[in-house]
Length: 263
Image (tube, rainbow, N blue to C red; front, side):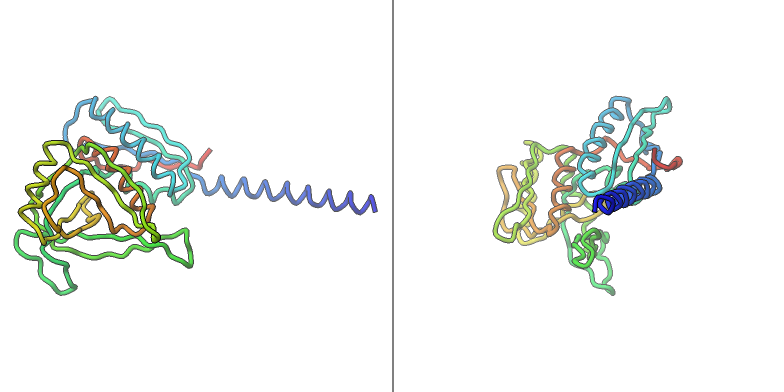
């Protein structure tokens, strides 16, 4: 009996050891360290680049909730570029589009929802609205539902900074709510915009996409607005965080440098 227990324990130990080695090599094989350069599209001061790095690091903290990012490192080069490296499992690169976009909040009036054969009205452009949904058969993946809106080219209000941003859920169905407080100057402009456009849709545009497009019910004074209608909590939480961090000081172009197996 003792011999049998000894053999069983030995087999379990060997199996666990081999399994650990296989898991280690599997993780290492699927881990990458990728180097990038962020090139400013317009001339900026070094202080602006330092500010950009602070915003980028905060964004990465948020993106770690959704993507397998392990570590990162930033530096400013002599020719006024930002170089950074990210280490993580291979599909962490899906996070990059969220990382480097400027993130400037714009409010623009919607003319109409576009059908497949609709023409874009004059003085408008087509902007997509992408709504994220969980794939119930594979909850790791999200499905993207896309609709196109004809949105006026003129920006009614651009907000590089906000006074405050809050995110919470409410009700039995856990509806997502993002509360935005504008800075004083923008609050006055927002009240004028909503008073002059009651009944129209006002698109909240960021990074070339519509985040939400609520219909204006009445003039909104006081400088506070609530954004509702984002169904996926991760999407709403990410948007709230990015709005809180503010926009990058200028647009950047992302240039991949190289990739090496993760250490």
